[in-house]
Amino acid sequence: MASSLYHCWQNLPSLFLLASINQSCTLKGSISMASLYLAVASYLEPHHAAFTIPIIVLFSSEKNEKSFASKSAKYLFISVFLVCSLFFQSLTRSLVGSKMYWKTLGAIYGETWLTSSPNLSLQWYFRMQLFSRFRDYFGVIFQGIPFVLVGPLSIRFARYPEVLIAAFSIIWTIYRPVQVLYDANFALCLSMLCPRSLARMGVPSFISLCCIMVPVILNVVDHWMWLEVNNGNANYMFFQCLAYNVFLGIICAQFVSASMQRDKALRIKLDETKEEERHHPKME
Image (cartoon, rainbow, N blue to C red; front, side):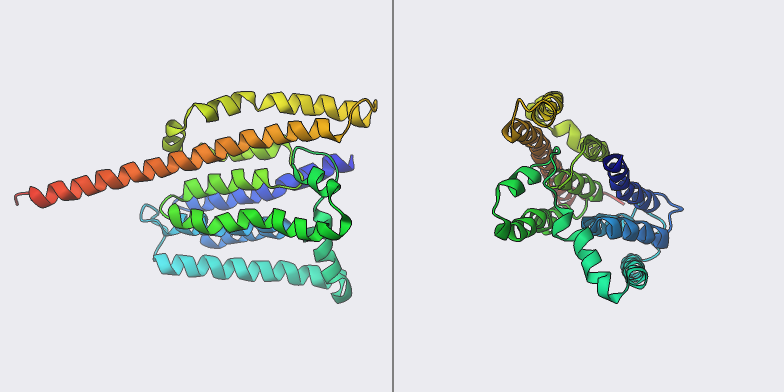
């Protein structure tokens, strides 16, 4: 029961993320409400703060009539997001007390957020194999890798916020300490925001998508063999988790590569158009 409640709680940040994206994509969307929803998602799971970049780009895009001024939209979104985040942290501090505040943050965002309980992630197995004195270092490195990728991806796909949303979701699915099937399903659904990128993806991604249920089914069987009837060991589950995350990694790499190919094709087409207009100016 506790595990089921935790997994339901784990899905709440995705709900608020979707609400924030919905506000940024609609003409009647509110910048303040989008900031509030994303602040709630980031309060529950801090890595959602990275989604401020693509959502700001959505609000600042020329196609969105609600962006009354690009700079004003950016500043308003960031300001409301910071104010809401500070409010949530202040509310937590007032509820648990100043003495327990940092312990509470450590319990939610710190080392105990990482787990040694078996799931579809790879983190539990590596953490179980490490000496206790190295676990803090491992936790920082494991959770820091996705943040390292935020900058390069944001620079490369600054004009494609939908690509950033889908790429961030898949990357954090792979590096999530407690991973369930819902996470991968949610990330793959967000990739449908970029149909042109999906159309350019190769055969390996299709094979990975078709084969991804094989390690999931074997993981369920190995979980039963190891923890119920004691006929297996942790290595059985680990190799299924490894295969599962390798398939997700292939899909993520193919998606990013296809998005780069799409951007390159558009740039070449734009350059050709400009060159043609330069040599053959239109007659007034």
